[in-house]
Length: 299
Image (cartoon, rainbow, N blue to C red; front, side, top):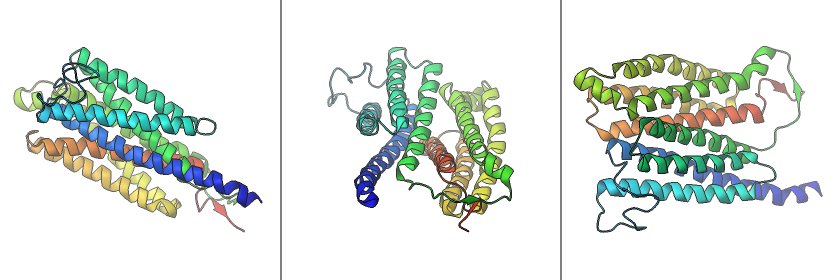
């Protein structure tokens, strides 16, 4: 009787999880498109908001820059509608979706201000960081929807300190990664790297970002190794986190070696950052939802 009762609930949960996963992919893509919009200096390609040249589709004015800004807004609208549907469907038992919807509203307001205030760097930076926080929250929500309920089993007494500290450890690593993204956002929105390479100005932001990259990468790789050891079911996510942070450093080095002359490399750097945040948020969510396989026994 219980299994029959839970089956429709599990089905709805799975459908919402699939919707959340698709929205997460769209959101990460949105961060990448936002990076391309900034790199191509297309942030003001549409001089008005929310329309573009007073229309839904500015056909006569359409060029690469206008397309990037127009498509960025279109993708944001689609993600916002999807999150609205998800928030309504999960109102009673997933408040994370409601929080994500509120972040979307904030993000939309910041997007409007970037245009109306002519790209002030504090607003542009806040726009980027809010997007990454939304990626983290939606990734955690996706895991909560897709992950089955944990088994109730008896705890093992070994390494209890690590068992208790596990969510805090993963959460701290995720916070470090987001902080590093904040440094990168502050550097990028002030065009500090370009000014440093061309005229020696703004090098402090570039130095801070480079110095922060090493400890953050070490923390992510250490956490990935611990995950692979303690939680075998999450080894794929751990490997993805390690690969993402190594790729992120490599892309940053290549971007500077190429003197920021390769927009695709710069955009990929921001895209991988969003992917890394999503993976770390997923690991954090799973650390709260399920015990480690070595923390529990079935005896």
